[in-house]
Length: 186
Image (cartoon, rainbow, N blue to C red; front, side, top):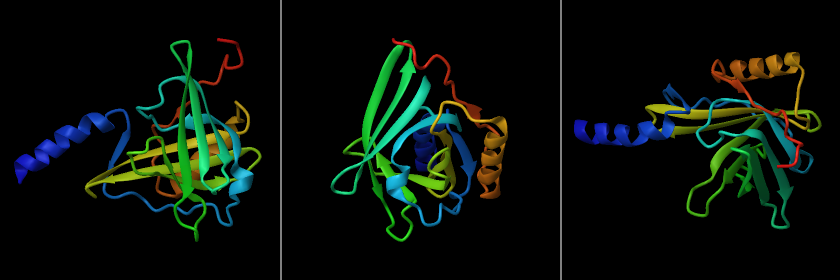
């Protein structure tokens, strides 16, 4: 038994090294009430985030487009080492009673990852949270402050961090995303 736990832990540790692991299961934050998916669609810029292994570049943004089957086309991009890199995925509403609880997958073989809209005004900001339990012993979470523009006032960012904290989400390691020089031609 001890050996299997050590093997599982040794396998999982490199996967979460750049992430933010916490003991115990994922928190259950409240999500945006009466969420309107159509209003959320469009271009969102990443303003701040918890560190994520899969996001290393600058000028990170995501464009959401509603498809005819009510799934969501998700195109995320970043500039890394002078190259524009894009990845396309699919989003779905995972709980029709809570349409702010989306799931997103960037692979046909991987399950949908939670992508919960905790708060949005649709025209300025959105607060997004994702969390995955690992054997219910600990969890790895992600949090993003998004904006329709490449910058937000510091007061808006601080208020967003308070919203996360009020939902038992530790954002003490949240870092600003680099959104400078993004409109230049590569």
